[in-house]
Each structure stands twice: as structure tokens, then as C-alpha cells.
View: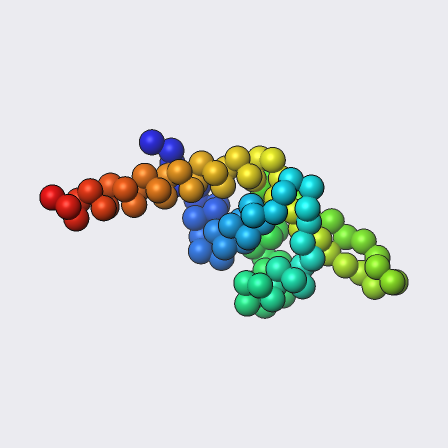
Length: 103
């Protein structure tokens, strides 16, 4: 059985990864858009993105658009793979719980 990833398992990081995993490999999302989608504060989102970036699950890039700084986030190949494994582990765990209810 696949194992839960302790980095992804934290609820806010799980929501971040679930959101990013829906995008294709090359698509990035703006920090502000991600913050609004998840209903997080700037500081909270920044702290969780930093943790995910440290382990190579997300890539954060900065650019200037119309002379204003913009931050973009995308899931990495490694992040997508680890998220997939984490989802498998969750599904297996839920499957075991469902089987326990039927007996």
C-alpha cells in the first residue's frame, strides 16, 4: 500500500496540491488567484508554498507584468507524482474504512 506523504497530508498543503494537480504540467497559477481560490491569507499561503517548494513539489517564479511584480506557482513533475501516491494511499485507507463498516 502507498504511504501518506507527511508534507502533503497537512490540510492546507493538501488543498494547494489538489488545486495545482488539476492544471496541466506547464500551466502556472497566479499567487493571488490561488490565495482567493483557497481563502487563505498571503502569509499562510506563502508559508505553505515555501514548504512545498523546499521539497521540490512546486515551483514558484516571479515576473513583472505591467511593471508590477507577479508570483506564479505550478506543480512539478515530482510534486504531481508524490500527490498521486498520496491520493492512492488515501483511497486505500478509505477503502479499508468502508470495508470495516460492512462487516
